[in-house]
Amino acid sequence: MKKNAPIRTLIRTDLSSALRPVLLSTALLGAALPALAQAVQATEAEAQERAVVAAVVSPPATTVEVAETDDASTALKATDADAPPAAAPAASAPEAPASAQDPAAAGQAGQAAAAAQDGQAPGPRVRNRLDPWENWNRKVFNFNEKLDENLLRPVATAYSDLVPQPARQAVDNFFGNFSDAWSAVNLFLQGRFKNGATQTMRVAVNSVFGIAGLIDIATPAGLEKTTEDLGRTLGYWGVKTGPYIVWPVLGPSSLRDSVTLPVNVYYSPAYIFDDGEYKFAITALQLINTRANLLRVTDMLDGIALDKYTFIRDAYLQRRNVKTHKEQEEEDDYEVITPDEKPANPQGGR
Image (cartoon, rainbow, N blue to C red; front, side, top):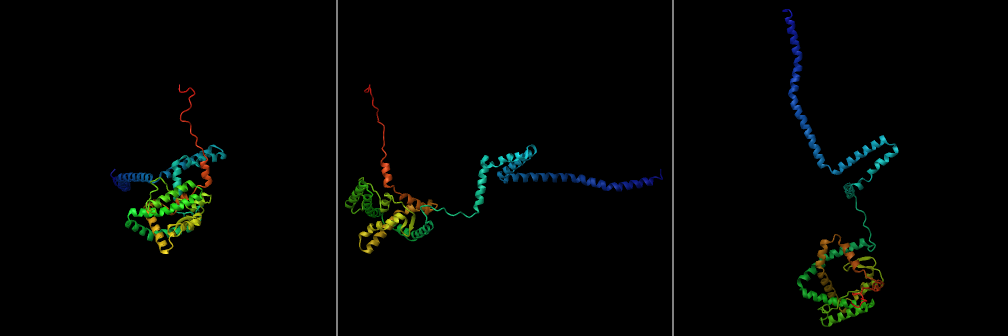
């Protein structure tokens, strides 16, 4: 037994030296397990946070589209497994009207299409049938706007500030009296003799009792104002308005009104004077006074009109649209039939 003691000691020494790395590794692993568990929990928590953030940030449409795609693929696989190949298109058919079944998806698809078109260049402007020369008219319109901004509006503003309102109203009545006289002539040319006679009486009353038209007495007396010119007279007899035209300084017009423009200008108040200086002074006064009356209107128009040119064009064409003689006759032919207020009583009121 004593002889075998060195061998046992050697064996124990060899076993202890052999097991020492294993024990050391086990101890290290045991010490590292808590740290490893914490690392795994931290990784899982971070993954959950990323998933939550992705779900919040990503749009619902993406999630809906993925779900619909998964459903469609699942249905397609099921169809391929259970049905013949001819039934496969029928399974995928409901996927086509998905936007029609889901209004939200349709709206999102429309927004996506609009967003895709934002980067494209705008298409050409649609030509208006009544405005075939729009490109040229816009250039003249811009010229008139610059002229008005730099000359007419400042002068009209100064005129409005310096001249009292009663004086400006008297000037407006004076030029309006000449316009009433020309309107009376056109009413007779249209065959509207009753209205023409009323307009003639209006001019006579204002010229005599209103001190050459400076005071409007006819309107309070019941003689209403009716504004007509040669262009509207031609329209009354069936002449179409024609294309829209913008003239320098003169402003908006039409082909029909442009033809009659020289006659209308010839019968304006400035042409009662033979002297050129008086004609120029009367024309300038009429222009400035008219522009002063439109200051508030143009200021409001500048604030509300998205496209000032289109707004003025449509308003002018609508105002110059005249009912023809035949149209007014057809309206007058209608007879209004009203029932009796009290039906006849055959019993004599018993």
